[in-house]
Image 1: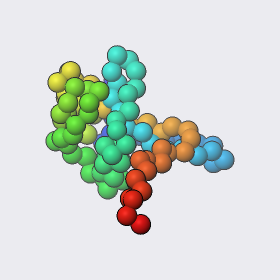
Image 2: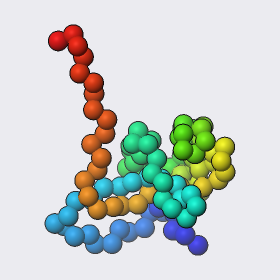
Image 3: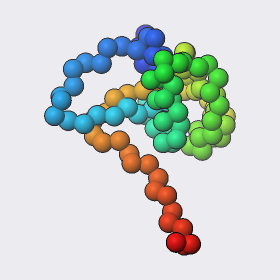
Length: 109
């Protein structure tokens, strides 16, 4: 049985990480045995819920590479999409987090 890392009440203890390196969480789904990250906005939404200690069962979002509108269940660690049901996974990876999208400069300065 896989360890559910998406539910903050059941999250496993993270092993000791090298303090000289930078780490960040990533949220995604396991599709065809590979990890596919969610869009940055949804990763932030899931991470904020995780840090609040909230695991919701009906998080609706749009994810184009999963076929459209999806329903995530953080308690059961699943995402249901038009393409099928996938495992929702939170993992801690080495490196700096993605800086996000840059705001466009307005031409009316």
